Image (cartoon, rainbow, N blue to C red; front, side, top):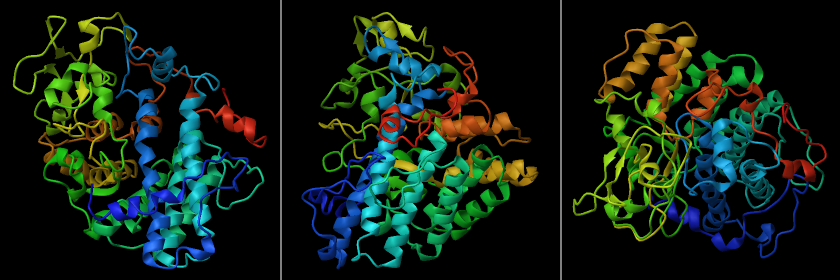
Amino acid sequence: MNKYIKPLLFAGSALGLLFVQSCTDLDEEVSDQLSQDAFGNNPEQLSALIGPLYGELGGYFDRYQQLNATTDEQIVPTRGGDWKDGDAWKRLYQHTWNPSQDDGAFNGLWTWVYNNSTAINRQLANPAITDKATIAELKTLRAFYHYIAMDHFGNVIIAETVGTESPEQKSRAEVYAWVEKELLAALPDLPETVGAVQYGRMNKYVANMILAKLYLNAQVYTGTPQWAKVIEQTDLIINSGKYQMATDFLSNFSITNQTSPEIILATPFDKSKRGGMNIQMRTLHYLNQQTYNIGTAPWNGYATLAEFYNSFEDKDVRKKMWIVGQQYKADGTPLLDDGQPLAFTPEIPAFEMPAGPVARAAGVRSQKYEIQRNNPNTDQDNDFVIFRLGDVYLMRGEARFRNGDLAGALEDFNFIRELRGVDPFTTLNEDMILAERGRELAWEYHRRQDLIRFGKYTAARRFKEQSEDFRNLFPIPTSQISLNPKLKQNPGY
């Protein structure tokens, strides 16, 4: 983790600033909280107030890593009794989830968004917080949360004040307009500083990125495409000169990835002080504990489909993000599972497999986020990357393509492909764009949004039949509907 962000993230962690609330009570009483009138008048106190708000951004990884199993880049098959979990993973993957049985998966994302929005609102109401840049940061962070809610649930609430009334449900187009308005209003006061004390925080370029994502998916959200606005916002990021492409692709995801010049927004983790980054536990085989000399046996769950893995050319440096083939102990001795060589195979025979070494080794695993060797902790030090420059070029390239500028689109896509060691495109179509985004951004949790934009999210794939289009939106959590009578369920559910 970046040494500059630690004081911000961990300052005031005892102040109890994570407010657990439902959408029917946005003014819940919180104990052990210092008076707002008496706290926040100097930089140290301000950091104590703001730090936990950014610390909770770490929930991004926890919420998305589960819901990414609804895409074609992540699968959590059943291996004997392992990962059966009442068929919850199967329902996510096959798009057969239902609001009652799977409420926890969706309510987790909803409450994370609105708990944090409420915490931000409380600080925005603090009379001691008068600094324009700080206020702009908080409003940008709040807009980011609302963008996430709108993207996943469609018609949601706008939480911009604290109060006791049940909030009204707004249309997706209304939330889109509000997020855009909030970001554009905050931009003039946002800092242009990147890295150092601003690492992991909102700045002008993070706001540009959220706007670019908003516009990239505008046709989905509102029915009206905004490709020119995507180009405008991505140009602002690229032409700022504040970020550069990392020379080593995987360095963006190393245990010291706070040094990457490519990261626009990351949520910092620390294996002891800010835990939660544990993707290696979710994907590695139990016996890989001996490969990396780590303190706990991994859980042998997450894998990718053979079709997704096979979309990478052998010379593509990004293919190194995957683990396939024979596994070894740290001393180089081949690992055996029940006397058979432990070798990861791209092919997964079935979604539900009988117990045994074949099932346990099925599926390619991920090492995109560097696996921290000799680590006694379950958690790692890698910061999770939310936005980075590689995505900016691909977004601009897609917008140029859709706007009729094939030459400009090829320039952006081939800039990325050259860095990744693969031949340039000589032409371009939607399938090629989607596939390239998949190779560049695998397991960075943009895939669901991309598949929906390209009309492929509900398509049939291995172990999954064509699903209904209403699945492009998650259900409004039944827990929230029971608390707020103004919420109406999404169609189809």
